[in-house]
Length: 541
Image 1 (spheres, rainbow, N blue to C red):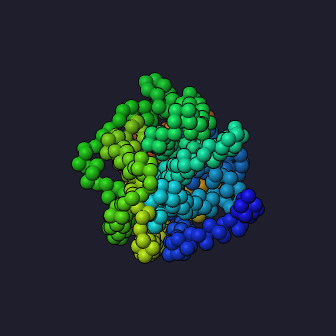
Image 2 (cartoon, one colour; image 1 turned 120 degrees about the vertical axis):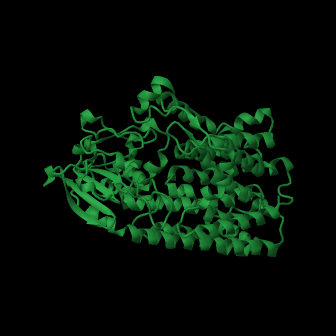
Image 3 (cartoon, rainbow, N blue to C red; image 1 turned 180 degrees about the vertical axis):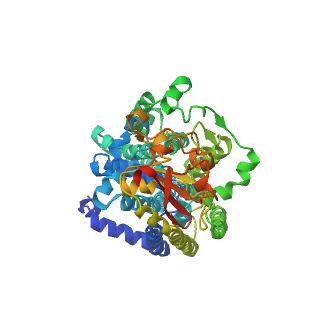
């Protein structure tokens, strides 16, 4: 028997140190730069009171209701119920709810976002190692973490990206090793993959479907034999049961009367899919990926990222020794790009559908580089990509701080309100001088987050939310028309306005206080700060 066979196994601490030593010897620059860049990537989420993400206030309001529904001091129980079976998008809310018990709702949300930003490059590194690709490209996951869809506030969606990469990397590694001989060992080996599949499913359904398709593609390219296929997909059984159960309990994907019943009156007219012209899909790709700031500093980031990706593609060489498996990253990337081009831009209330595949496709494009590079070439890539990652983190931290300063006067408006009341937001001017898009559209939700009670427009009226309004007859808010949050000029006070204690306006148009939208004597101006105006109902005087 050899000495190696007789040696006792290393402790976890010593095994970790040994792995770090090997990594440093193989690529010292990447080993030093990578953790620094990952830490820098979470800094933007902690530099300001308000984050510049469109849907973020709605998600925070959902977390607040999930966390505080049973607390009488919040007043949430007067207006809300929770319907857990209505949506699979639960991971974000449940994890944040658990963290909120320790650190509060706002900090819990920031920890969740920080985990996403840190995990994406780590997961990309795991994928690159599993497929024997250029590991320095993992650093490109940091600028890509701050894509336009994060700024839309699609946190559920982007959080699934790291776990997609983790899951496919783990599946690849399992294909390269001998199947454990005992049934117990086989089940134990499937547990990590099964857990990752559940995490992806409860993050976002679109990424889950990509994951399932990716597993199928990997098996086709690395065919383990018909008898072995069953074992390779066994980890999908638990999540398959969850998915089929959700389909049985919801009408969200149904048609006809079932669809109308599931969404009440707000979305019942949205029954079909819509496409955009192909030239527009292609022409606006870069804009939809990283275009987020008014000062156009994101253009430099886009240009630098494009050059980095070109370098990655130019390193394409030998790759994996197994030619079939080595094509998996390329084929999966092309499939996801195909989804971006071919799928509809919207379906029923879901927008956008196809656009969401763009950042995922570009993340996968980072995996095309060859690992067959010399020591100095690897060091050069790690240094260059690390500099890009740090520059991206610094650029976003600066803009996040600027946005928080711009939004600072909003807190004075909230401080002037009483708790557990009813607030309606009319956003005539939702724009920011820092970030592109209607960044302030959902800011009224901060009243509900900080003061309790209820604020509208709310995602409680959307089919994908586990937080639902009670019926109007049971104390809930009056239903709002389709896309009313975008149509403040169409609001008329008698049509539901009397139900609210406060009207919160941003960008109040001239003469609004004396117009038909706001009848004299019904409400009175309480406070005006910057672009914000707070009106109070006469019954509150």
